[in-house]
Length: 207
Ligand SMILES: C[S@@+](CC[C@H](N)C(=O)[O-])C[C@H]1O[C@@H](n2cnc3c(N)ncnc32)[C@H](O)[C@@H]1O
Image (cartoon, rainbow, N blue to C red):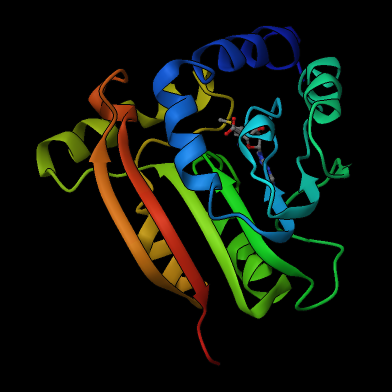
């Protein structure tokens, strides 16, 4: 990985994604996190301050060690143990039905094989476990979606693998998770191409 991916992009991402609107959305989603939690794509740990008192343990995976000092600092400020593994979500080293809750925020856009990762999410969730997601993705407006397709190759370079045009709800259902709640909305402070949001929850669908 070059200087842009290891030094510049993580700082830029941390700055942009710690803005007020991002913080409010993180807080709202994470109030439902509980028990033994797995976060996929921890990034720079921006979700850490927003987990509530119902979390007993946080495990997190991310193949890229982004700003490890900031992650360590943010991990210290929480009341529960945090264990981070530098691995990809597509192959999780956890037993079946380990977690009460799995969290993904702004990560399904970047994981190279999101359906494989989501099948892993399904596998490691307990039967009544919950998957909480907050993701940007493909617009339902055909004109915007066409622009997302056009701009995607450039976005993948600037955003270190981030895609603008993934249909997040379809990916989740393709992986055997049943969506129990889905909000679609547009972020106010993010340009439309990257601000079309999918927020909600899903549970393992019966096989
Ligand atoms: C835009 S960042 C979001 C970070 C964080 N989730 C947040 O909300 O601030 C996308 C993250 O996905 C991570 N990522 C990329 N490929 C991944 C994979 N295969 N498995 C897990 N995480 C991955 C990246 O390293 C990066 O931290």
